[in-house]
Image 1 (cartoon, rainbow, N blue to C red):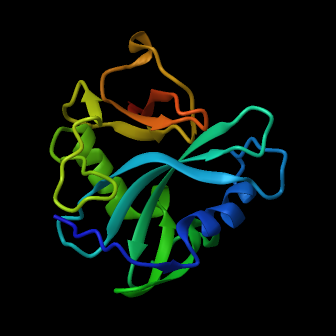
Image 2 (image 1 turned 180 degrees about the vertical axis):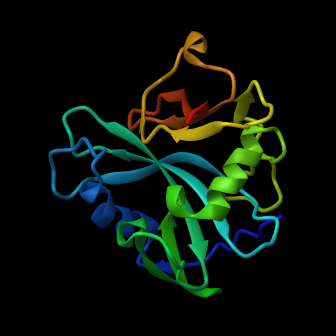
Length: 192
């Protein structure tokens, strides 16, 4: 199980995402500088213990209507080779672990392998800010083999009805700026 250090990161994850998010083709905001706050998420454990894995929901409150984004992230102690430049969200100085290279999780093979394991029912979602604490609010519908299937991550989150959940879908929640909690499909298995 991953140990969560309650320490500083400079710059913070939200500061890094404020710069990185508007450059993504799936960003819906009109503002060049979003107003982000952490709204939810969970973690997965790397079986090797080398990569920190977090699925963070951030809400951009700069727009007239707030927009929720899912950003899977991989935290590493060295640069990840063989990924496109836009995969790097940024680097940050962790108060305990030193320099961390923070990557968009869709480009990190460890993050994607653990997400696939979760969708197969072979990994346990962990609380976002507590060590060694499963998160029972994160649910997977219809686990099973993923042969011939790809993982689709919903970058822009919208509240989901039970009927919209498909087999092999990952559902979790977050909180809107007004305090309302909602759930959505974060990721799902789909044909390649």
